[in-house]
Length: 135
Image 1: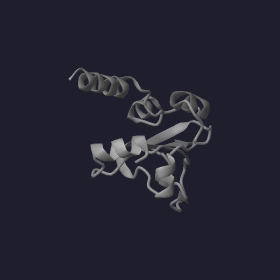
Image 2: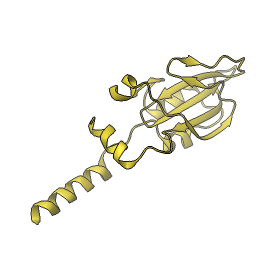
Image 3: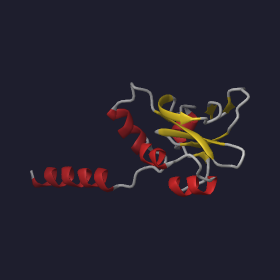
């Protein structure tokens, strides 16, 4: 009984204290119009790029459900490129396994808009555990 309690306490502590992925809704909420690319990179803690885990890259899956967006974030972008369009803003993409943040930069290389996408609605807690542990 003590061992089971210790395991539950350890797993709970790990889940509560582990660092979250930098590409997440909290970071998205901190991105504001007029920020520079350097300021956006500071908010996210990394430069633009594809930060999906190997499993998501191999299966060619990415966050695709729009959760929020504002302003001109350019055109929709995916790992293999952007949908052809004539955007006013230049889209820059931060792609994680759970979330995607796309930021539009205008003439003065300042943020003109931002888009947040997440995993599909059918993505269960079990899917999250499997992804986290690579099962």
